[in-house]
Image (cartoon, rainbow, N blue to C red):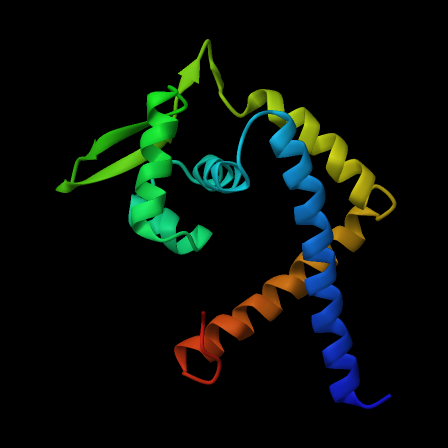
Length: 154
């Protein structure tokens, strides 16, 4: 097998694993009454609270206008809140709402943990760390190629 075929197989495998993970998670998300977009946005906010709508749009690849409507709905439901940016009066920072010391996402963390244990349970911690390292390296290569105009983003 030549190098191109190996690289193609890696690309296909990454795509296929991602597709299967998303399908599984989307099913769980719908069971708790969220849309996949809502879930993706909530995960992004939970990973790094205090982002602007523009930052969330870039990270989730959801256009700003639909994201704004989605955030409006989550705010109406009392799940997120927008706070004034202390350094830019035009910008709002987005946070998960805390209730009794826990965020809206807390009940879903156990479900996610069970899902991750099923998916990654047979991998040793060292294997997971190596996988993360390799995927981070591939991600950095893609981002660099995008900046250099070699690969074009969507």
